[in-house]
Length: 449
Image (cartoon, rainbow, N blue to C red):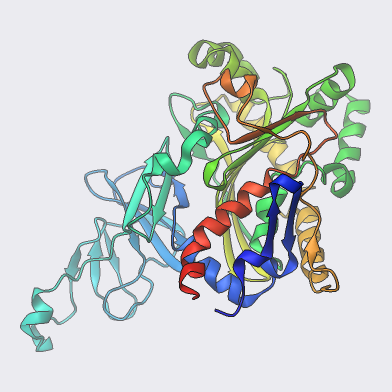
């Protein structure tokens, strides 16, 4: 290993200094080590249980560079495998999702059932195989670790990771709140979107937690909302951002903040209040009865949750689930869906989808702004006269150890928290990302490889 990973992050909390070297976003050796240790050496998010709801349903995803097949067998049990035929290594399942009792390798027709068991080797009797081959397992290789939490599925290629509950820690309490966590469960609205941008994956990681860029990067979206407010009328697609703006104008004090959790998970949030612009408004009473008033109020807040390293749930303009898949130092693939509670009314679903279309994905009014900014940053990282980036300092004097009364109200803790007005736009929550990044990269630093 020729790169000094520890030297890429200047972390001196006692001196109020946190900086990141631009090379962390561009160096091919750093990227290769990230794939090995961050994405293939620890827990990563794979998908939702609802993506494979019935027997023999499956979906495909990835853990770093490794293709993964998540399949529900005939008895209804979910399993996760390396999506690779043990014969010659060809990728077995070729599509993103489907239903198959049997998966047939397209290269040599070896066949596997939905539980991953080998059910056929083409022309096996004529193959003159040795006893050693015949006695060996020919099943698909299961992921060493595969666990779920509240419908969210996680896997690891490393068997020695801690339990999923330990990995999620206090951040799990905010997973509990996703789209109200209905009794019927959560689902993905049909219509997955996959797109790429030509920049590093960590820019997406940061941007989801970045309130500072909103008024600078998304003026077109803001102007559209302003025109709709002026026009009024029942046909207008109203946004929960309108309610956020109203809170900022009408009240003083805390308008939002952030929580930083162990293992690199973070949440940034904004105060909304129970508003009819929210798709869950019709369920406000039921949510309060089921979860308590404090949790209900949190459900109506804007919340952007990141579970390190590749899961983001953005509940701001609407509700979006994102999976980050790095492809190269300067190229990232995003898989995104509109996230919704099962069983919501047709009107609530309509509102959710209309708000989603406004803001998210390459066809919306915000995602293109963000991806253009990422690519601009990636080009700017070539400037090495001063390699240190300064975008990690806002909120340094507001950050406090532990959670606060608002997190305690729903039984959640945190390593650090910030409460602030709408213009503070904390950047100290990014520190959790890079400290977790260093923890996962520790084996590389210990071995020097």
